[in-house]
Amino acid sequence: MQQKKILLIDDEPNLLSALERALTRKDFHVMTAPNGQNGLKLAEESLPDLIVLDLSMPGMGGEIVASHLKENPRTAQIPVIFLTGLYSKEQQEQRGNFVHGQIFVAKPVETDVLVGIINQCLKSAPSSSVLSSSVPSSVRLIE
Image (cartoon, rainbow, N blue to C red; front, side, top):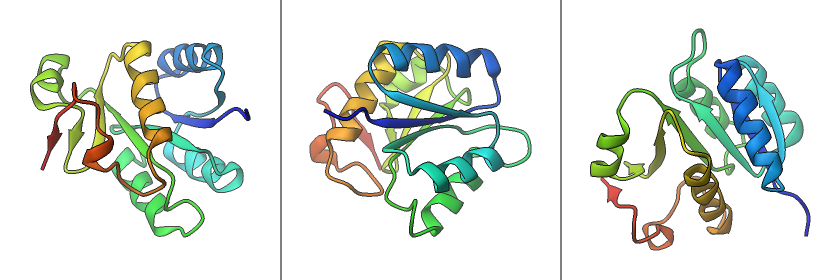
């Protein structure tokens, strides 16, 4: 089986390095970008199977990066998981990981949780959002 390509885009070098090591150990091919500009370029060049994207970065934030990805026909179907420090793990547990059809994971993120979400997204039918039928029962979909 071919390794799945994961692109990590985050401006926090320690988090980027830790996630890269952890995902590599889980047999993913991992690419990293320290900012939105580099992330967009790498996504266009490498066409990853999934992108893990920091929502809040200086310069080009995650929402803008995601918007550019969805506007580009080459990258529009790549699933995106947003990492965010904008709400706590407690709020994530109350709300679930899915908000308006988008996947949000609170920082700091536990590697096993992120790997589980990545695997679930990769098993889903290719689309720009995850269908509620593919959501694990432990995660609620918020509309």
